[in-house]
Image (cartoon, rainbow, N blue to C red; front, side, top):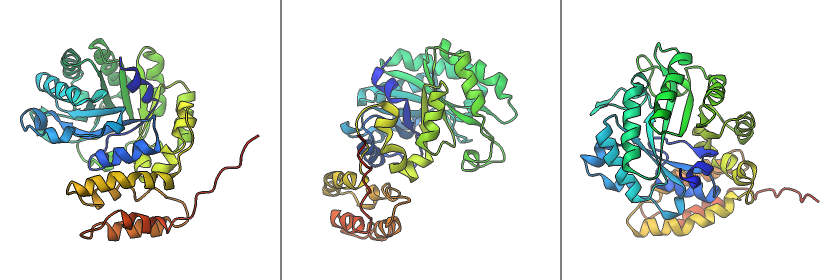
Length: 335
């Protein structure tokens, strides 16, 4: 097992389509040196049949970083996992939680909760193909399933196939009648069930996901016996709240990071991106929530969202936006 990824999985930022791209991950890594970062879901057909290897590009600074794959064909997933391992990812994760009804080479995402043996076959094939960790992200069940029955069976089968680490989104997914967006909010959360799964599978590394919006909540789950916590939207929309204190509070190392300093650290990265033909807003769109809840946050957001799309916008715009934000209050020295 990759100890780097496993250790980092104590706190991770969820894979989120259209959000957790490489620019977002670079920013998040500056905020926390320890948390595990995930790619957006990449489908195995896109890599294996479509040859879309550009989807695997990332910066070495992002480590530890995990590739999330979507697919349901064991052989194709094994090939995609191999491509991910060759690209240097620390972990390959199989998506069994996305409430998508799209069908490509069969189905992918949460619908796989209905086919635990197929998931086990996929895990076994991927593990055979790569040396890095193969993990699973799942729901507690889908549609009319009874999570109390299907989740233990699902975990048993993937564990037998060699999956030692799983992240459980503590909601059902309703594949009929709810949109993917509604599936993130409407089905009720069942944190207790996930905690019971840790008791039932003490040898598995179990992380919890879904609706967790603060480091204090994350710590409560860890203190109650879970191995890891995955945070999605809160880590994206209020990244400083979740990630700036993560290293000392969750991992017991390092110091609280200052988002103002992180903005300055982003400038060379922005310059490299622009020099390569990129646009400023491709990076700054992930930085809009950096000062959420702080004086000047609205001015920061407005300056970036209005200015970064303009042709020729560069690092000087970021510095102008930063001038809107009040200086961070330093905590009093203890001693």
